[in-house]
Length: 321
Picture 1 (cartoon, rainbow, N blue to C red):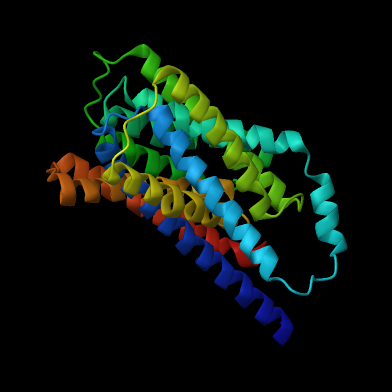
Picture 2 (picture 1 turned 180 degrees about the vertical axis):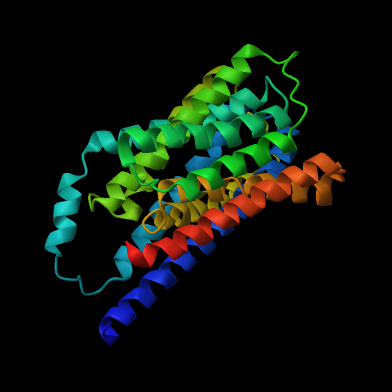
């Protein structure tokens, strides 16, 4: 192996680990959203209105950042033919699909489903449903999941999630809530798979797949929220929560998450997303003083070790691909 090859491999490894770090940071931010949402709902704001306002703030923030960066560019770079071709290949309907699936479905329907079933049931359905839906799309579309060991690791992570939520009591659950959460899982998986497909095949840059889809989803959620839930009474705490959710947990987090999909396979992103199970639990213990049973700790360990195994195994396999 030449020096150039070694340098290239080192750069790929660095980007891979940096992408993992960025994705983990995003899950930490998104996990804090569960606590912030709980405080926001105490101010009598509906789920679609909260989600719509949050992502409206995110979209405006991204737009302002883009305008500032463009205005500060005194000398415009020469056009890159490859990038121009990528922009040409990115059809508008892709952006509409990403906006509907990634935000209106994955976020809006999730918020709506949480009002009909318990948070525990919501978390379990999301963890299992998101991964299962993405595995189905991987089999028929992306085909990035190869190797029995990786598949066993994913199944072990799902088993840890199921063990954590044992026993599963759906007797008093509202059937509509379960359907809404499952529809949210389908939207999440389609959005993740389509984003990975567009980035992997050079049809778009990561920045192109955030602002417009987020704006489409935010507009849809805001229309639904204001039509059925009404305008909330704003207060300074609620405005602070909306700004944090929009700027930090929204625009910055989704930009990092989309960028990480350039260097991580779709199922790797989905597995890292399951770290939110551990993170939300820790935040629940710290802020809401929740106590954990032995079974819950066992489930967390199973899920965490399985996720770590898949990431390490995927990294060891990459140099040979």
